[in-house]
Length: 295
Image 1 (cartoon, helix red, strand yellow):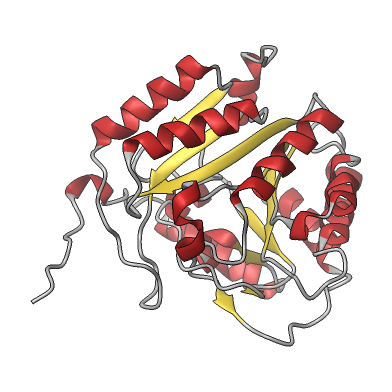
Image 2 (cartoon, helix red, strand yellow):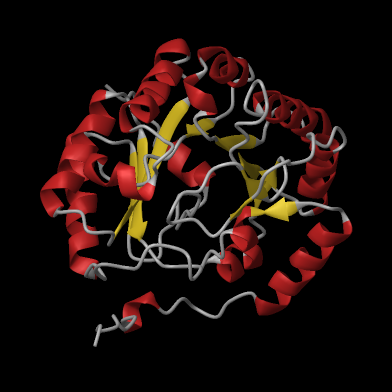
């Protein structure tokens, strides 16, 4: 009989923000908006909603790819981008009183630009509605490696450009069959080379069968490709069709990864079991107070 891994106590998220979660979920639904917090079943959504944070998911809530770790549904014949969505995102961000807005999207391989123009329009609407003193973070798909698509977003000068590696190189074929490890690294490098003032960021999950050495190798690869910020969290199975958890990583291992990444010179590191790519233990404003030149 196959043994089942039991979720350890350290992976039980705090039951924060239940009332706020209901409120924000209702408001989002009424305005035909989505958050990755809900679509990807993030364990921290209650805490983030309580703090007035939400990650806007643009271009719908269904994807053209079939990554084996993700709870977002895969569908064919997706609708065209909603031309009014950027404006609704900006209006919602103002209504929620946000000053750090995170925009992500599903992967849209069916669109000629992969949906990059929707990111551009959303950034412009946010600045139009909230001014230039806000922090805008984009968490993008790979756009099939299109430099033109990526450049169009760089030209809008977001505070942070985030593109996730998700897992170590060896596991890509099984975990991210339609993605490419080196393509993702090249995107991050391209962003930093084009605009050194933009903070580059990536995130990974552990517990999928990787080794400690492979994680360290990934950190080295990310640093060589000019990544400033990195997040490391435990992989959790969100849907029955997702890959099983191979291992629950001990908190002390996450602490070690954080120490190693910090010693490598990353500007900022989040590494803990419940960390997700858009999760911050402290406000971005406080992080950027300690801004220094990243070599």
